[in-house]
Image (cartoon, rainbow, N blue to C red; front, side, top):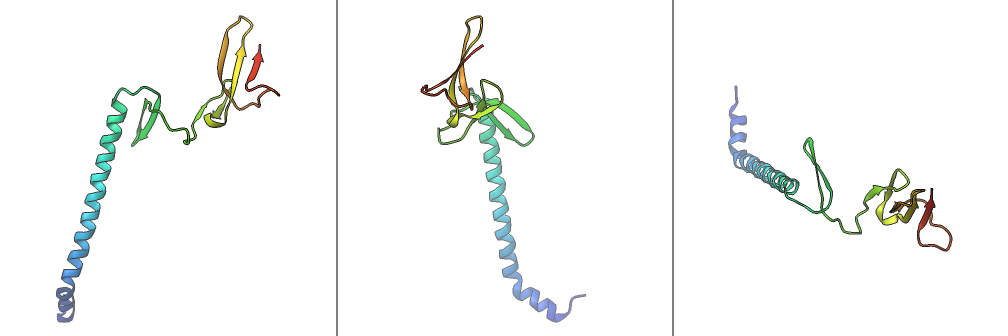
Length: 122
């Protein structure tokens, strides 16, 4: 049961309460639109034919497509000698196998003194 005092307070504040609810509703609708737009963009990225490897994770799935990232973004790549290395901090590495095959890549091992790369002969 609502008293007259409570009824008058509800009536007096109804415009403020309604405007607060409308503001919250508009904000939630905007967030939903942005989320749908982001999902659409991510789906287009994952389905388009891109040139480099790009791993994109959203919701529960992963897609392996790629884009070129700028050099100021730290990227982890496979170390030629095992493990991972940050691409921007890696050293050039040459590995010469016994059969004469040469592999090139990056490594986190320090370069040989006086050289601008790491050389390994196996």
